[in-house]
Image (cartoon, rainbow, N blue to C red; front, side):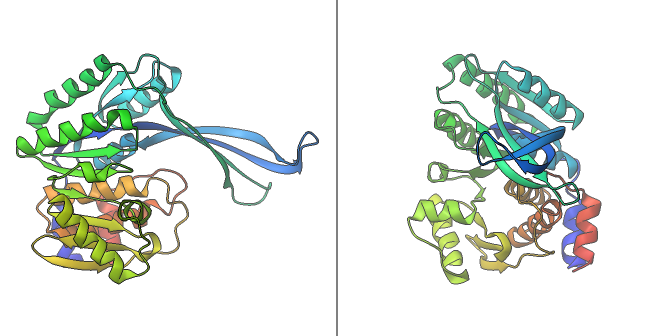
Length: 327
């Protein structure tokens, strides 16, 4: 595999990409538990530390940056302290953040309570999500669009990281269309609205998302391949990369056919953000000139690295090359 993938990995640096989507602040409350509350039959967690990380579209941007790309991130945040924390992390990661305040809204956060016994590994006990129910003002949407359009002429490709806010779907679809019209590659990772992104370069759904779109369960590899083939034709895209967790990937290329890519590495420690890693590595490998199946194999390796750590994580080209040499 080294001779096949290493040249593409080595060419992934130096490109410029635009990420448009939903930035998320991932918050981790770390503690231990050794007793049950007298107020209710619940565990009491003694908080020891608090950690914040980039999530959602911001994690996609961080993965691209770690792989050697220069990245512009355009999206909405709230006028709140979480936005300040997110902006600080974006800056520290070397990302050109164009984060637009959302009047009346909030920064999307996912707070995970991580706890265990005094001498055991911490595990996720609870996740608390904060999302926006009301649509943002039109002026905020226009500001995100303006930021993205301003960046578009200087980038090689666009990643749409759509975490499911229906009030922003039209914006993301329009920007994807504008990017394609400008001759840019566009890869879309959309939780609920994938069918609206017709004509982009590639899409990267996971298996539950694909099953929801098709209205049926994918029972085996054959059905996964057929689903990827169907989505490629239905959306008129170059390729569909369907992630299948421990079963690996099913990839359908409009011209090259289909291929199953088995998962690599050991059992995952934490799959948080794995889809962001896949979208980032796959897009950057395509921009570097890799054929679809090689780009998918590189994305598969990248995800195998990041899921070995707790929480959202990134990998480097050196780690990718080491992983490819070990296969």
